[in-house]
Amino acid sequence: MLGKGKGQAVSFFFVLSGFILSYVYPNLNSFGDVRRFLVARFARIWPGHIFAFLLVLLLIPHDSWIGVTGSTTHGIRKALANICMVHAWIPKRGYFFAFNSPSWSISTEFFFYLCFPLLIYQWKRQWKIKLAGVFLLAFSMFLLAQLRHYPPDGPLNQGISTEAIVYIHPFSRLLEFTLGMTMFLAWEKLRKVPISRVVGTGLELASIGAALSVSYWIAQHSSSIEANKWIGKAGGIWFLESGNQSFFAVLVLIMALEKGFISRILSLPFVVTLGEISFSVYLIHGILLWFYYLHAPVFSMLPDGLVYGVYWLLLLVMSHLVWQLVERPARKRLVELFAKTSAAGADSNAAIPHEDPAGRPIRSSKIGFLFTRRWLVAELLLLSSLIMVIAVHIHNPHSFCSIGHFCNQF
Picture: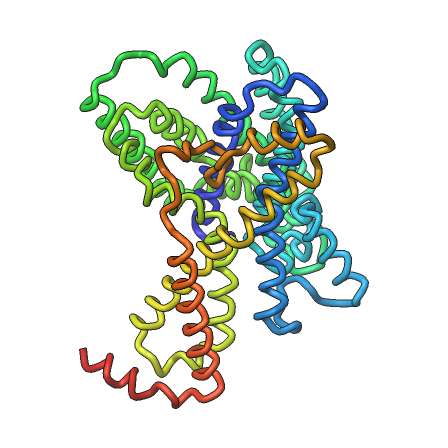
């Protein structure tokens, strides 16, 4: 079975995304609104995704690329599916995990974006019908996997698996996104309810505690759930990876009300900046780990603490640079490129003045830019130095043995 509960964080992201998109785009009343929305969302996720894709090609040897086996034609197909962000729509492990495996969730999220204009249309009047319809869609995917007896984790390029149908495919995950949209309706009704800061903080702590506790309980009991013949592998995988979505929805709602001290802390500039770069962190972290495992014998001479610290330093610096130098400029350029008139371009830019990873606008007057050009120059120099040191160490593993010996003394 899948790693214990590794998809819980993804489930939270899908719920959060549905809430925030409903907050940012409560109405898409014309074709122009829909077009600007789709352009803005594509421009938000595609540049970072492509950068990570190219990083795999640059850092990882060809024979180690995930899912890219067999003929050249198959490799090209998988690359095109990845570039177009539709690889999670193809229920074969060799496609949805190809190249940069975490990007499957970006592909699934892209499907949500395409569905959002239909979901948000008359949402306040039709939300019950649409939520029920999405639930039936997810349930039908569960029945499909259960009745067809797909293997839980199909080998690469060996057909459809239960994992692909229940855990990866957008049809199964659209329920979490729609549940987040539903929480937006609840937020609209509750946001003006007077709640003291103390009570608000208590609610925030309770919602966090409940979400964490349920996640832990699910991880501990997923095997026993799976053993039930009526639920089986498909139900076990769904329960393990998506079973906490209702508690995540409540957590998102409570935090969005901003009645307690925790939500206030989350709005601090430093925390917001971490949220800004979290998309890059998510896309890049696996690639750096992959690179490390491919060269693990070389790094074994250095203390684990040193390697761990360098990994996080490299990841955060790279993620911030990607956000500043790739994501933001490319997003602006893509929006401008798709805008047919200057007025349309202005509207498109206004739709996404600044966004966190899920799209929530950030007030630039309050937050501003934490990192100036001097910081960027310093980060580039630091990144270059780290890359040079790592390259030298890989070329000559004994070059830094003295550093490892010195660190081991402590």
